[in-house]
Length: 221
Image 1 (cartoon, helix red, strand yellow):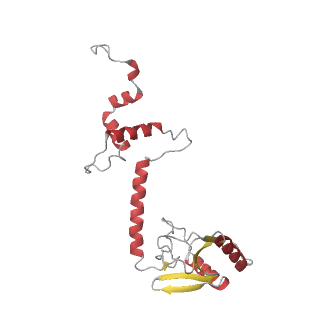
Image 2: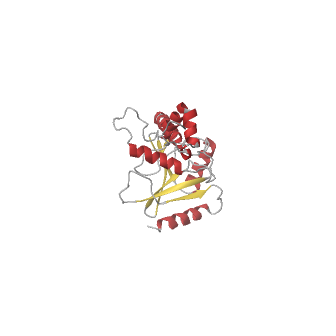
Image 3: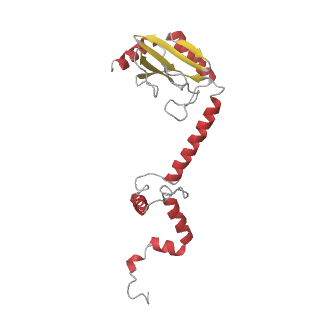
C-alpha cells in the first residue's frame, strides 16, 4: 500500500486481519465472548488485567478441539454458566420439596436426602415407588435391617459387628450400604468411605453375599 512509508508488510495481512476489517462488529463480539471468563462482571471494580486478557487469548489459541477428535458445540464459558444456573435452580427446587417430601438419611449425623438427590450432588436415577417398596422389603425381610422414622426422615439401619450400617435403597439396579464404626466420632460433613453395593440381580444366598462384602470393606480399616 502506498503512502505508508514502506511499513506495510504483506505477511501481516492474515485471515484474522481480513475478518476484523470486513466484520468489525462481529470481531468485537467474538473478543468479548472469548474474554467473558475474565471480565464477566462489568460492574466489578477489579476489572480484568491486561495480563489476564492475553493469557486467556493465548490459551484459546492453543486449543484444538477438532484435532483432538472432540466436537465443540457450545462455548465452554457458556456451558459453565448454564450449569451454574441449572444447579442453582435445582437446589431451589429441592429446598421447596424438602418441606413436604420424605427424606432418606444415610448416616447417623447426616441430613436426609430427597428420593432423587444424589449423595454426591446432582440428580440420582431413582427407583419408581413400586421399585422402592421392593428394595425396602429386600433390606428389611432378607437382610434384617430396621426401618427408623424420625419426622420426615426415614433410614434403614443394621447394627453389625460394631458398626451401624445404613442402606440407601433409592438408586436403580443396586442398593448401597454405608458403615459407621460405633463409638467413633462421626464426621458430619460427609458420607462414610466404608461403602459397598449389592446388585438387584443377586438373589441366591443374599445374606452371605452381603456379609462377605461388608467384611471385605471394613477389613481395609
